[in-house]
Image 1 (tube, rainbow, N blue to C red):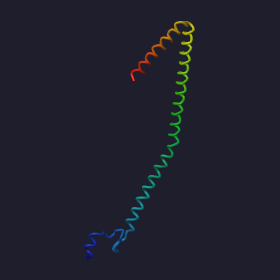
Image 2 (cartoon, one colour; image 1 turned 180 degrees about the horizontal axis):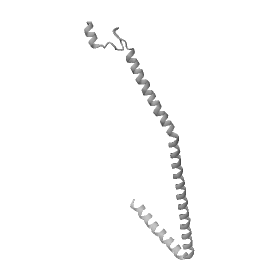
Image 3 (tube, rainbow, N blue to C red; image 1 turned 90 degrees about the horizontal axis):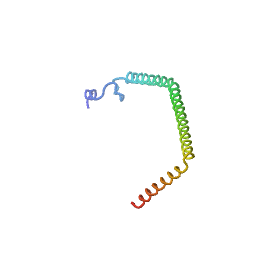
Length: 121
């Protein structure tokens, strides 16, 4: 292999070096670029870290609002259940015979339904 062929295959500033050039400028540029990228990433990380407490606080406030709304809905449902139970009790007190007859009839229908389901299998 002659010198001309070797020059075509391998640049003078190759990391392997052939004694014709120095890799120092290339390494300095690469190092400088790497430092700039790392500094940029560090700045973005600092910016994100500065915004994190604010975002966490907003998230916490939203979660608390949702919890409060759920408590209100739970209270509303509990009150509605209590009203319905009281209404059913007063209806049974006002119409005891009708209530018992209705209970017997519902029991008979459910019994027939259950028996037909058992025989169909």
